[in-house]
Image (cartoon, rainbow, N blue to C red; front, side, top):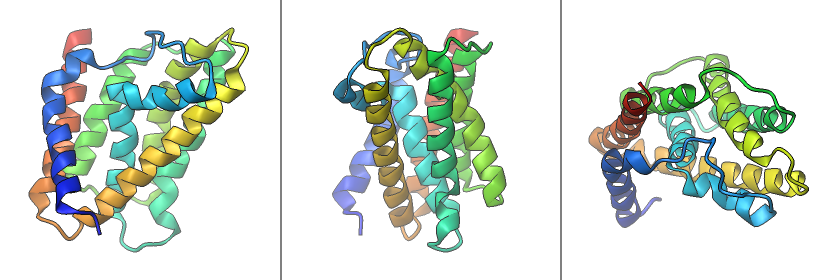
Length: 201
């Protein structure tokens, strides 16, 4: 069971994210993640990527009807298409609206967490997978030309799985907690996404 202290910390993180959206990393800034370690830490240091990965896990757990394979549809889709997007970015693929789509992903995921909107597994996979492509492209474009692409991608993928697992565990624990806790987290993530969209407007 998730400890009250850990849940309180996560609520604080979500709430404080509202005031720190200006420092969020938006993909195209280079963090020089050309090694396994830097690839692993990159999603942890970029607020937009961090919140998106946690948000996918939270939403999946909060809306799951049972602890079965369908619980993993969203996280598995995000991780897979994140990697696909990163590989495309490494090859020089560019899509318009990259930064706005990353910001929109936070707004959407935050609202999905706050409302606990239930969707079929395939729909959830499609929604988060679409956002994952843009997050992946942002990572991949930073790695273009690096001699250690595969090490960095391996680190990034491992961090993605870890953050999804943290989100899933936290969301599952929140199922038996007061609903305001999940709503606060979702609202915090949505607020960051909305703030980033306003900055980009």
